[in-house]
Image 1: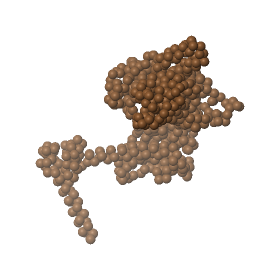
Image 2: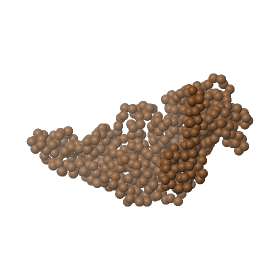
Image 3: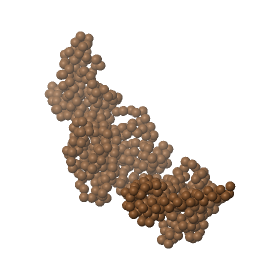
Image 4: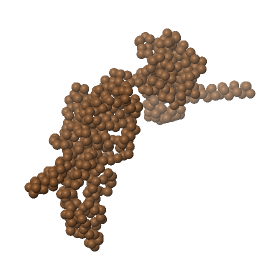
Length: 631
């Protein structure tokens, strides 16, 4: 078990909720629910002789834990079911049959039927649920049918067959459980009024229904019909139990975004969390951290979070619920109305079930703040990329190569020789530490990569010795055995050889050379360590070529024109820009030159150009005479 996982286990609250055990990459291994998240999650990591092999394997593979707190076990149960069906974790074997909880459906048809179902179809029908207690759902349906006259048959009650008299009344009509819409005894408008009353019941408006049932119960009791009174009593209990709405999954079809915020002024951070509710189901959670919050009110932080989310959102819900008010709700409503095409209500629930739901979301935001504190604790602990660790193993280094320095030589046909020294720290380039060198010991036109490498390595580490660092954990030389030998000679000269390892990286076969070995070492072509070395080498080459091109460009600009009296770099650049090249400047008339640099300088340029042409003609004549005498 890692130290980070131990810290997370210590932070888990002893509350009802859902937990997810994850791999290092974020894949969910197991989703479960618990009355006490702290006790249940910790139990997976207590190895006992009676522990199942599956649980021991699950604990060994788990490297991260995520929890979502809820208010009731029913909420945790539904949320667990939704997460399992969406994520399909490997170790949730008992739910792989994709079993769903039942809903109550009001069918989209003439004279709608009301029946239980486990399948949701997008046909315009209305669904209420899901229900974790099937007995309670069926008891509620019986209570509804005992009060409202709702048909139970599956006949297609279109106006034409009813008008033609194709149907006959059934037993339900004769026992007064149905008003007989199949034979035209009840109009469609009257039937729909009954359906609206049922919808009110299913959406939680149960006071009127309970009052009616109580009246029926007392009336039956007065008639000494105690069995019927007991049935009414049971119906009242069932309706009351049914009316306890669940907050994790809503019974209506509204799409809602629920935003919660937890602010920690001492740590100067706020955690903002979003629960996405679509068609009554929580389909996902999203969060972010707000930093540098000093002097900013909670309302301003909420406004910032909302603007950040909705300016990039592709979907806009029916309602937006906030745990605290934002600074400009009217502007937010206008923005949402413009993008959705109709009004989107922005609310801050203060009482009732929606306020309780927002408290649950705030509790999750508080957990995120605690996780942020954990990450801050890790800030002091070094994070080493896998490629750096792999490089240490592949090269068999004594220490991790946190700081890598690489040298490269660049020239063009032996002219303009330059060198680069680039730095990688923890696997990433650090441009502020890059250094470039113009070579002093190599004559222009006589390239010598070995001598150039010796000079630049000597200069780099001579200064490091004078300034007492910084020194690298690994030095990489772009080249083979020859360049590596020259670099080693420079390190010996500076008396730092052996303080840190040095290698050479050959471009042709990507071979790694060590000073003490004759034969090169081969690293797997697709390994992370070789890819890191290639990145380092390519960056050194890019930086050296950039420097070499910059210097060559400067030499071209400060060319022959600087030999003319009174012409400096700015004037030379102006002439080249005006006429295109030095050759065209030589061919330009004095009048055209005057328009750019003035008459005095134009005469000097023409005099210089004519003299250069005479000199070149004399050289050509002399060459011809030499050629003729040889012939």
